[in-house]
Image 1 (cartoon, helix red, strand yellow):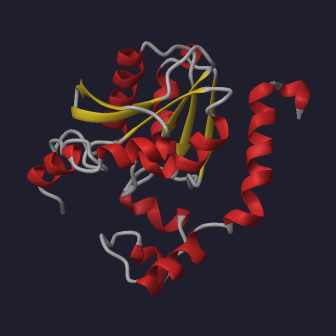
Image 2 (cartoon, rainbow, N blue to C red):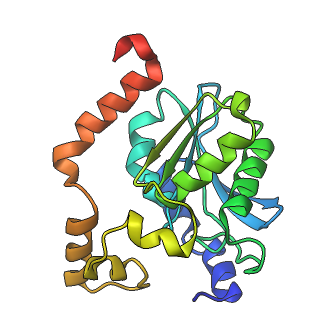
Length: 211
């Protein structure tokens, strides 16, 4: 478990590298659940708010930013206790409703309206909660890797395959062998799928008549 001190140190170290990965400035905003790191490409294009998964960070969307920066304003952020955002109150902040609060605050501070929400894994649950609060405020919702289950521990086994690879998701550091094992188990080969997925997403964002 990372400490608050480690989180603060990371906020100052590596900022230029993080900005280079996403091609967007990194700022910090104060939300209902702590200080949150936000990357925003800016501009007047349609907005996509991308929400990362458990134990990940906003830089998980590096390739997504590369693919869509020319056509969309892209915003992403580190959830509380993730990436370089502050740790938060474990009694009140580490749950789906609180994460949706943070997403609302990020959109409000960014003055971003009619956003499409993209949620990966845990981020998908956050997106579902966020858009359900005010459906008319959003252009759309896309979720990926979000198992169809109730967000309670008892339901976890029904939504995920129990395997030794799943245990690796909770580790802070991977050996080289574990990196390969986890990537091979949990993700599709990028060189085989990235182009077709990108083209499909672009088509759907352009409108229903283009797909």
